[in-house]
Structure formats: structure tokens, C-alpha cells
Image 1 (spheres, one colour):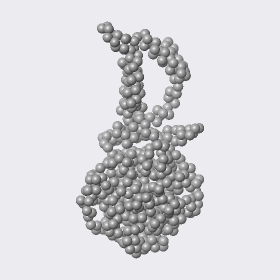
Image 2 (cartoon, chains in turn cyan, red; image 1 turned 180 degrees about the vertical axis):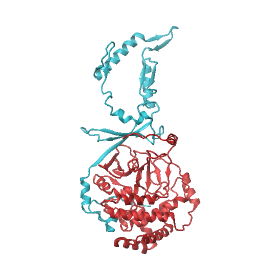
Image 3 (cartoon, one colour; image 1 turned 120 degrees about the vertical axis):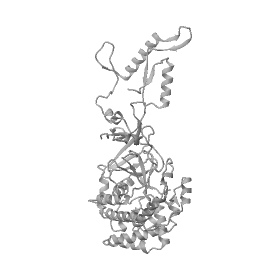
Image 4 (tube, chains in turn green, brown; image 1 turned 60 degrees about the horizontal axis):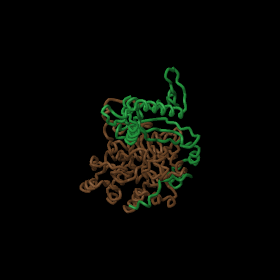
Length: 196
Length: 314
């Protein structure tokens, strides 16, 4: 079959002149073609993602409105399991099925906060302050408690007083990076957020 | 949108792979006829939708009481399946005269059932009835080959209906369980035709999965979602519909190859038929064409009457 001669299946806007509609005397009113210009086309996007909750890593499809342009409000309006995903074949547990409310929750954390030792109050801090504070506390703790050699004098380079909890929806590659970064500081106690 | 509550048995169903091929149910044409008749109410294309509803009803009747057809060559079917080729390949089976028998019987039944047809329709039926076998074969090749401007628009829905009916009847002879799953299957694994639309299912074992619906034999086959069924692109796909779109239809538009495919979301229209919803949402096609998105998916029940040579695919 000569595939190259295949035409696009395209309707002529004005009057649908040569279509089966006209040929059978069933052309719609001329106003039909005009009216279409006044209908508003709505665009939505469907995007694949991974559920953030546990280590099963179920596939999701997220439905959103709004283009990627600036000053356009983007809004996720529906989330469902991804039927093509080999892990969950479209199904979700009750937590995963409630993800849309998690995204739109008014109680969601929007910025870093700190509750210092002895204080009852959460204090809002900037990202820079938060990261500086974490780095400083980690370094102080590591400097104070790092174990370079064991009792037998063998080099062990352990840092046992700090632990690390990483994300659950991480890919194998992200897991590898986590391992490399965290282990290189000497931390032994680390896990992925898989059982919460 | 609220989440659904899982029924007993659904968890097992979720754990299985959705079937690759869904053969059309026995009432495929009856449901299409019902769908078209209900969509026709207050529709600008009411006359045409009602006509196609009658066409589908006649297809339904003949599917239940088909004319005597000789069996297809079974070794050829088996060989085709073994080599992952469509067993009912449209370009080779068109050469057989069986479909012309079905066309003759269908034309007689349709005319008998509908004595009150308007003059242009009876003229088109007569034109098809009187045409030579060779002429009908040429028209059928043009229609299934997507050369819509090379055959008269008036005979298209009736010729298309008889072709659909023949291929759907032939599906009985295909051992569908032997069709092996292939990734990126963009044409029908049974007959090699292009899909007319996509269908997003809402019942197990295919809940949430997308199937492409064959424009000829009504077979549905699984095709991964969020992927262009023309260029296989996955980037920047948009899902376009009119505000308050009533038919559960959204068009998957690919910014890379500028084609679009209409999809029926059964979650929003559980009883809808994709072919009926496609015909009823012609306005969406016209709007998308203005946005520069071309449609590759043919409907055999409506010749688009585009401007012929100027919109051929490169």
C-alpha cells in the first residue's frame, strides 16, 4: 500500500464543503463553523511521577492545568495510579490515593522552621540559615565524635552519633548517590524513608 | 475528584497485566447505534449522527445474522501471527471478494430497513450498488489507504460500514490469544489499520489503561499512555478539550509532530462509544486544525473532504 499518499484526516473549516456531510445533504448550519471559534479550548497536562510515600514506589499520573508560561497559575487537579507502571498497575493504597489532598493541604510545610533546644516556639528561617545551621551542627558533632581507629588500632573512620534519613521515591541512581555522599562522611546509620 | 473504593477481587485484578488485545463485544455496533442516537439530540450534526446510528444498527443486525462467508486460509493466519504480522491485513484481504458479498447484503438490508431515506442517501446507496467490483475495490483501497479525496464522499459511510462489518466478522477466525504483545504498536495488530481514537478504560482488568481502537475491525490494543501514537514522542503532550466537553473526549496533541489523537475517557462517559463520540466532536477536530494540529486517525464513516492534494502527509 502506498502509505505516502495517505492524507491527513482534516476538515475544512468553512462549510465542510466536500465531506460526506455535504455529499449527503447534511451540512450543518453555516453558524456551526463560526461558533467553534468562540468555544474556549482547555489544555491540561498529564505527567508521570512516583508516589513520595513508601519504598514500593508506585507510579502516578498527575493531571494539571495551566501551561508552563510565566504568570500562569499551575494547578494539579487529579492524581491516579499509572496503569502502565509495572509496580502498581494503576492501583494505589489509601495514602497514595489521597495525594491530591496532600498537595493542596493548608498544613503543608512551605518554608524551613527551627525549634531550638529549650524553646517551645517554631521559628521561621531562610533556606540559607537552615542549611548553614545543619552543616555547622553536623560538623561540630562529627569533629567531637568521629572514630578514626578502633581499640585494636585499625582505621575504621566511623561517625556513629548522627543518622540520615533519605527520600523514599528515589531511583536506584539517587540511592547510589545517597550512599556515596553519606558513607563518605563516615555515617553508618542511614536509611530511606520507607516505613513511615 | 474523590478516590474510588476497591471492591472484592479488584486487588487480584490489579496484580495482573492488562490484556494486550481486547476484541470487540458482540454488541459493539448496537452500542454505537445507541450512543449516536443519544448524542444526536440537539446536536448541529443531528441528521448525520442519526443516519450513522441507522448504519450501525444495520451493522449490528448483520453481525448477529451474517451472510455465509468462506473460511479464511488458516495456515496463512498462523504464519502471519508467528511473524507478528496482522493476520487480517487489509491490503491483501481487500483483494478477496468476500467483503463485496457483505457489502451487497448490507446494502439490501439497510435499504429495506430504512425506506424513508432522503434522496442524496438513496442515490449514494444506488451508486455503490451499481458500481462494478473493480470500481468498489478501487474505492475501498482509497478509503482504507487514507486517500479520502479520491472517492466520492457520499459513498464513504456505507462502504466503510460494510468493510468494518466484514473485518469484525473475520475476527472470529483469528486466534487472538496468539497475538503477541509488541511495544509501540501504532497500527492494529489484527488488520494493520490506523486507530480511529484512543480509549482510557475504567474497569478491571484494564482500569486506567489506554487502548487504541481500530478504525476498521474495532479491535482494541494496549498502547502506553502519555505517548504520541504517531511519532512515539512523550514530551510536552497536551490534552485539549472544550470547556464543559460533554463526550468524555480529550485530544492528545503532540507538539513534536503536530498530530493529535482523540481519546475517550470512560471514567467520564462510562457508556460512551469512541466512534460515536468521535463523530459528535467534529468541532474539536476543526478547532485543533486551526491550532495547527493534524489528525492522522481516520474514521471510515465520514469523509473529511479536506482540500485534497494540499494536505498530503510528506
